[in-house]
Image 1 (cartoon, helix red, strand yellow):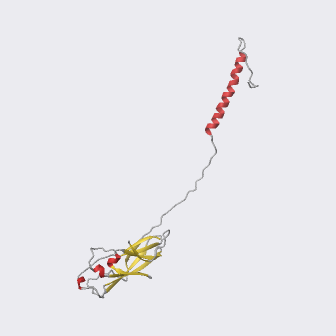
Image 2 (tube, rainbow, N blue to C red):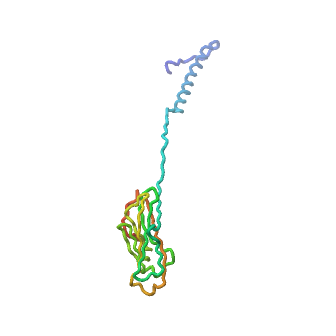
Image 3 (cartoon, rainbow, N blue to C red):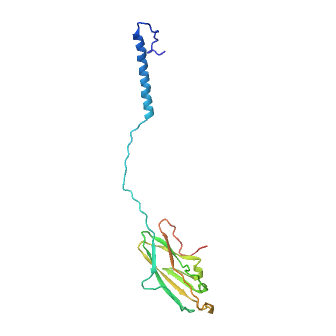
Length: 200
């Protein structure tokens, strides 16, 4: 038994002082349990927070526009003969806010005809040039290696020609196609190899 707790004798009538001493010893023990339990339950620490405002993020725009150059006109030939050719120039404008890589395709806009196999189409942008039959152009595109900066303009020269070897079977044949320019962001995109790219 601890030294500070004395063994008490059984209460004797006429000795209320000892009975009160027992109660007085028990109260501090109960109070201590409440205090320590409270500290363990809250585990509070001082904290602080600070906020820095003003962070903004905006996305760039990738946008391309194209049209026939002012000094040119669309190719509209109705009396093409073997050995003839016709040309047009197309302005390609980067109207977005980011530099782009771009490519040029010549998809048919009609049903096509036998003329597609004989008609040669040449596309030239700077030092990059490609000549293929209109039929062959349906299976690929011309990739331009140099990026086009925002607000800059490039010119694509388009030439069609009907070889002198074209046969009589092509008389009266006609076809329609368009020039399609596809752009992709230059930043974070591997630099493409300039030249013909097959769809295969």
